[in-house]
Amino acid sequence: MIARNDCVERDRADPLAPLRSLFALERVDRQGTIYLDGNSLGVLPRAAADRVRQVVEDEWGLGLIRSWNTAGWMTLSQRIGDKIATLVGAGPGEVAVADSTSANLYKVLSAAIAMTAGARKQVVSERTNFPTDLYIADTLAREHGFELALVDADGLDAHLDDRLAILMLTHVNYRTGRMHDMARVTSAAHDAGALVIWDLAHSAGAMPVHLGDADFAVGCGYKYLNGGPGAPAFVWAHPRHTARMDREGWRQPLSGWLGHAAPFEFTPDYRPAPGIARFICGTPPVLSMAALECGIDTVLAAADRGGLDAIRRKSIALTELFVELVESRCAGYSLELASPRAAADRGSQVSFAHATGGYPIMQALIARGVIGDFRAPDILRFGFTPIYTRFADVWDAVDRLSHVLASGEWREPRFSVRSAVT
Ligand SMILES: *Cc1c(COP(=O)(O)O)cnc(C)c1O
Image (cartoon, rainbow, N blue to C red):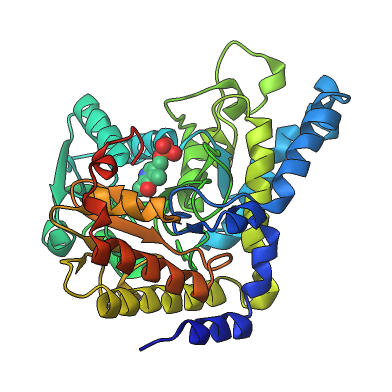
């Protein structure tokens, strides 16, 4: 049996523990809230409020339009993109920050479709991929006469054949936390003659990512990058593709003025900017970019404490502790581990399925101050962000979960009332 004190000791010995002070968690802590949902919305970085206030009051309020030049607003996408690049195994100048993950996926999938000439007309993804990815792919597939084939993760290899044009996957599954072996899948898809697009929504900032030889990637700013609600997303294309786009003058479908080679020449015809910058569409959301940069800086602050490798080590330790505690302390209440049991096969989240009570159990748990989330139809989902989640938090969360289950309080009707966001 693991005692709470053992967890407190592990926090004392944790090299990443000091990073928790980079987050504005005092009021959350005072409220007694344990936050296990950083995989959906990362915690507020302490620096963000002051930085956003500075951008509002000084850069906007005083600098006014001059700030596009004097405060570097025009180069925010590149500057923040370069920081993200260090987290996903990309080089400087290879990542652009813009728009939403959904919009960026539309752009890169359009690029991939344009690059696949010939008989191949199939886009393959996972049936349990995040819906926005599937909706975007469905629309583009219809528009271009492609077929979108949805398969189970286990059956993926059977679809890597000469019909496959594009394999579009999310590295870590949002429901189960199951993680693909990026290098292996990328190389298998290439061997089959296909292009690969990775969605890094649940991996960027949570573990080392090596895009390596992959073709395109997109990712989310508000999850493990702590960029704040609706933070801008990012987009990457392998330099071999951007070089070819440069040579062939390829334009992405959202060919807006800030993805133009010379936006301030205001020419009537579109000429794409070189490299990844062509994936920018319109004016950057400067206030959101400022908050996003503060979020990314919290992850980069781990650099001299072992960086993403240390983050991954602690992530595995936190998720293993959680699984072990739930299975020992909540046995007999029909919770089934829905994430891979082997830590190497999952990201930084753990999901349990409950056939009938998934939603009300999570609501009752939230009422006891443990915030996870529910994913229909039956998944209780818990995210672990190693730079602010403590081992003692894991112990306390499971302690409260065991009370929710043992008391049966989750059966109270008020916990079955559905909100818009689950
Ligand atoms: C969170 C998430 C998104 C979010 O897309 P938005 O355009 O920011 O709403 C997309 N894909 C995956 C896999 C996600 O987990």
